[in-house]
Length: 130
Image (cartoon, rainbow, N blue to C red; front, side):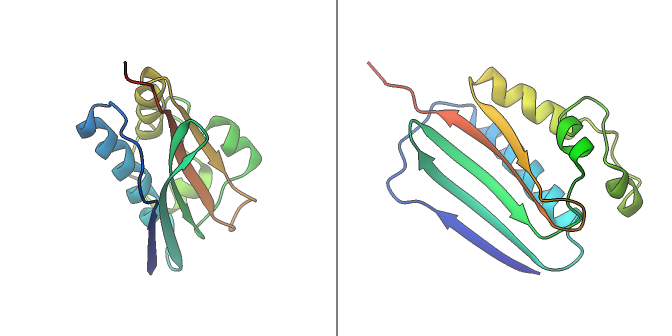
């Protein structure tokens, strides 16, 4: 497995619960590893406009259109994901979404289709201090 990390320089600070943010980041990373039997993963952290963006891309099992619409729903697991591992009840991404939204952020997912990988990530606003 190839793993690439790209972290932009001079990122502004954001005020968040770092332990929970680490858990969110770890959730996206472990899911990418779990559902990418071989190939590559890419983790990125960068600024886009007035937001900090974190995303993990892979060339793993990918997602159907139905999966894309439901993957952050409580208890949802993609059919292809169930074939790879029987563990999990479909709460991880739901909890991730709730936490990011509580920080005025948003989660996102993109996939060209089954077998073509996916990108999961979140955006957090850069808030002015003072």
